[in-house]
Length: 122
Image 1 (cartoon, rainbow, N blue to C red):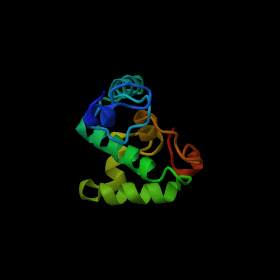
Image 2 (image 1 turned 45 degrees about the horizontal axis):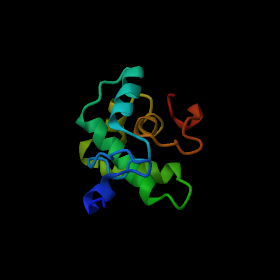
Image 3 (image 1 turned 120 degrees about the vertical axis):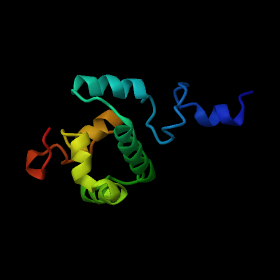
């Protein structure tokens, strides 16, 4: 019988879930994120991981409804306000903190986020 900790840490697909990413979507791993980031020319640092965790947590806590891009943007602005908010996140994710951040975090970007008229650069 699996221990309680093993049950909590195991993802739904039987893959060990990284305890640093408790809200990670099923099948996502930091190795996959690193590979994707390299493909996009990013060198991932702790601040990138922090932003990905924030995105994963937001999506997990709002899984019962469609993600509103404006609310997500505002939540990121508030969470990273002390570091410069969304402007800071654009330095980490030049492809857009929501669009590129979601891709690397294993999340489906909300509708409209890749529309260049909205301000995304992807």
